[in-house]
Length: 151
Image (cartoon, rainbow, N blue to C red):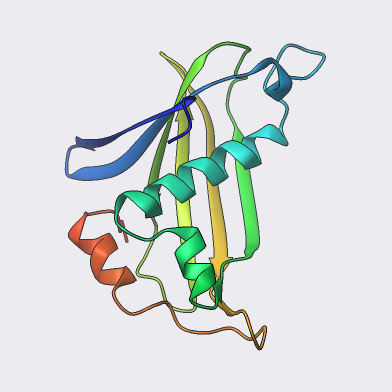
């Protein structure tokens, strides 16, 4: 795993999520000394990929099996700025049982404050035809088994 990422499970009041820690690099910031809004896309991707990896679904293996997961919708709501060298905690869960798409929800915190809430929707696409397809068999069960689906 990337040395910049540490991962762990968190459960509060029947709400379970997978979390990673991410140290903000200088390259992640803008001239105003804040995390540049575009950098959050990469941070969210890291959280999403590591969440799936944690439950046994590795992106490179899915691609080898002919499955692509393009982002089809992204929404971010900024609360407070992240800053250079802060360690952020990114909490990840899935909004509902995947069908032909999957929607991840994220909350990003520094050591005290909620900085950002985000939702990212990805489609399941056949790599050969480029057409949408159903979620892989077993993915919903693995998400559910790990209590990551929050309908």
